[in-house]
Image 1 (spheres, helix red, strand yellow):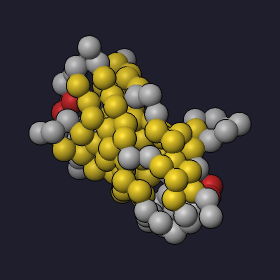
Image 2 (cartoon, rainbow, N blue to C red):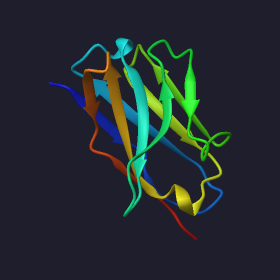
Image 3 (tube, rainbow, N blue to C red):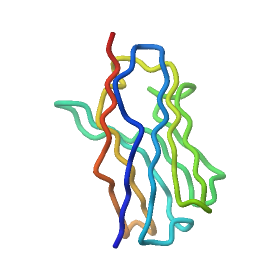
Length: 117
């Protein structure tokens, strides 16, 4: 059974940090590209960060470059998103996504991140 379980969301003030984690199981994690998406109320889901299967290539949305860092541990089957200098516009539900060969596509249930003073 495929599972992606996100954790680490919460309520923080602007300028603070959070670290999201996603624990994967039920598939060969090391073969999959991993993505973090987010969706704010009333907005479309947005791709935030991508890491290739080996971890050698990272990509970020312009809105988070320099503030967010994606990483993975293929031994522990986890992917993380370190979020620094958070802004109110980062408020959203954050989703972990696993993709392989443009055919296998798995999603977590999401974790809420709220940035507010």
